[in-house]
Length: 279
Picture 1: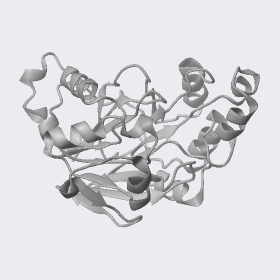
Picture 2: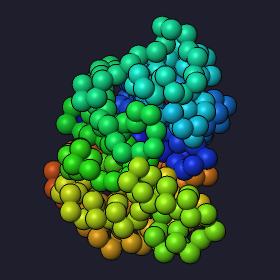
Picture 3: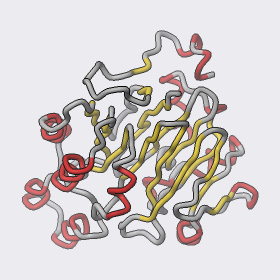
């Protein structure tokens, strides 16, 4: 009944998240090159043959850079909103494009993927929640504010990728020009550490086992700072910082019978070729 997940990369240099069971998987965004995506999956013992579809959150290059090559190489349907498709500049084979509608679940094997609109400075941006049996994993990045929709889906998640893009003091005192600072901290920019922490503290369900802090700014945040900030309020939830330089481990997300904190459910490999689960 587990959902297995890893962040292949998370940041303004590329975003790609793998979520799947032992038979089917999807990618949320494809902001790495096809070659780099394949390389990182191989290192984790994951097979592209398990990936059934790619879901695109919005048209910014760090979310779509590798999607066209990946989709055509592996004949993968690309689930994308009509607005994102129109503004992305992507040119897929017609049969690969699947337009989704907000709040209407899309079935990929035994996985159910629900998209809902978010606040971000893109044409038609969406967040996603992936469900398999009783387990929910959310991907909530590139968010200007923690709106009621985000709160609703976040509070249902056993695990979530949640944007913690910037520390407010570091951004204010940093080198960015004022117009860029205002874009980042505006209602259609990115979620700060403080905003993400408020959402976590006030709306985290008791059964949330893993929180992946995601899309950290290279210049305006610190992995150590944000890890410590959330650990102080984590309780039974394991805090993982999703790197902008490498993939995380693979985590097995399961329904929790209680909220006692245990060791994180990592899937560790000796040799990828030994793992029939991911072949």
